[in-house]
Amino acid sequence: MIEINGLNKNYQAGSQILKAVDDVTLGVEAGAFVSIVGHSGSGKTTLLSLMGGLTSPDSGVVSIDGQDLWRLGHDQRAELRNRAMGFIYQFASLLPTLTVLENVLLPTMYAKGKKGSADAAKLLDEVGLADKAKSFPAELSGGQQRRVAIARAFINEPKIILADEPTGDLDEDTEAEVLGFFRHMNREYATTFVIVTHNTALAATTNRTYRMTGGRIALV
Ligand SMILES: Nc1ncnc2c1ncn2[C@@H]1O[C@H](COP(=O)(O)OP(=O)(O)O)[C@@H](O)[C@H]1O
Ligand SMILES: [Mg+2]
Image (cartoon, rainbow, N blue to C red; front, side):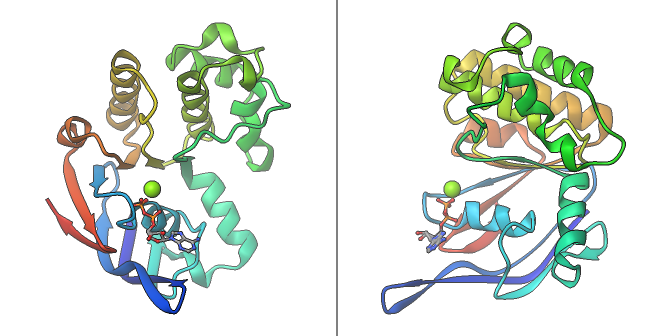
């Protein structure tokens, strides 16, 4: 499902070259439930955005479903990303002028085979926010906003979910609910998950864990 080969991404840090992602090779098969752990600054977010085609690598290959992301044109890459992948960013990124329901529906604007309000409402129910559909993001707590962003990631029924510390600001009960929901989607629809987390208990529930250290990756 995801094939990464010899991937490198450098940033300029003053006069130094910083290897944010350093020669990473890994494969994530369809239906896998995988976690990535590592200290802050070890390259987890950079790797996830490379996987999702949001950041271009300096060298190496990222293939999704057999398609080399950076051999596709801009529009094809955007289309693949929108159709096949759901993103849960480290910081909830909701549009403040749209309601909760409209935020969940946002990714459907660019997708074929449109999902509608009923689908968005169902997802909001699954993340425990059925009564907040008409609220605006500013009226929600940080944890609730986070759950809206989680619902939004699933609206186009993606084959892959890339999640960057998705439960970082949730209380324990809500975290357990969200993880239960992820597992449900993984078992029921074979959705592939790659989850970056600081939470070792969460990592322990996944089928495979990688650790990043200074841009390099290794199986735990
Ligand atoms: N856009 C950027 N420009 C410059 N340096 C960056 C950029 N993004 C990340 N970095 C650097 O790359 C390294 C890895 O960052 P990141 O992938 O965010 O790590 P993590 O998610 O594990 O905390 C850090 O040293 C960070 O400062
Ligand atoms: Mg990060």
